Image (cartoon, rainbow, N blue to C red; front, side):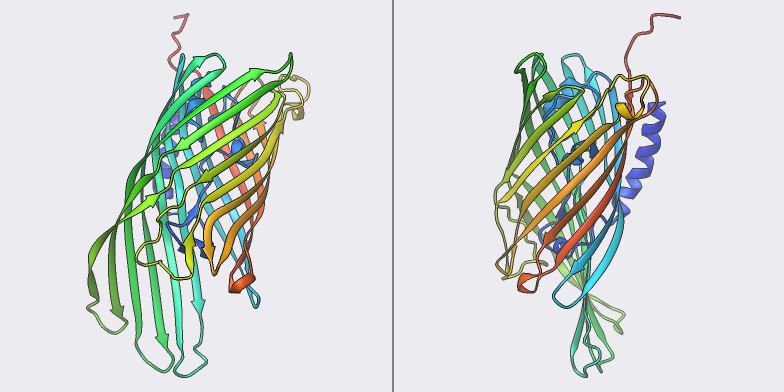
Length: 410
């Protein structure tokens, strides 16, 4: 059954992942777009806390976790988001539906492997400056779409029953297209400029997870993950046109190397496996060189990224046969992110809260449906900037099965 689900999902998402517009934020204009959360909904519902060596849920943030899998796990997720953008003088709303991830994890004794497709960043904005009521004034419209995706393959190894190590390789690829239009009131012709950047590059990630008993019930969980700095190659093209001119001007293409910085993530937690967990995660990322030729600006700079999160889960009784609600996993978390973008000398920060639940699919099954809610605020109205208040509803499916098990009966 799980094999049929995987084939169907891959065919659908291979199309959707390229066609979607994963954000509506004006801040996605900068760099290579909004950085997406790279984990599963189970971890996102805890604000990114992912420190436990889980045997049935796939943790794609730390490749060492794959060694703890005991069943083949296929997971796929998506979100519906609504945002309200506010300035000192006006406000706008936007909605979008997005694909979040698709991944497959396979246990192999002391080893575990996983591969999948995950959006890395998204670009999606429409900004308009309307001065058409004033003769001779210039009106403009700026629109962007696209982003970067990655396919990854990772391998984990269990050195000891309580200690895992792992690594994964990622191929990053995508396309970002921006279109700007300028019109002078009273002038018939408008000018358009279309910039297209085709992006590609390889990156690597290593991790380790360790857990130890504190007493008969409590366990200490730790996780460490490191992403190496890498290069993202950008092949850029530009077309300039006048609305009444059938022959646009094609600017010779150029190539740019964008520098993706290194990143380290440390997490720790305490809890009782299959009962409850409370943990924290901290992430730090160096300065990147992310400005391309079409979106560099004197009032913008990139600084170090930081993230702090606390979260956890609670399961009343995972083995209950009499109460379905007791077998549901309840999750929650809080996060604070300094996303590394500074505009008009103002740090663009992201503060959010997550809630979620893992709902079992029938008795005796480890497969589940996950739902999540996210509320947050990004940016500020200070210095003529935009504050974004967002809400996301997420849904994912995690299917578990036993593969490569020799039948004992004919």
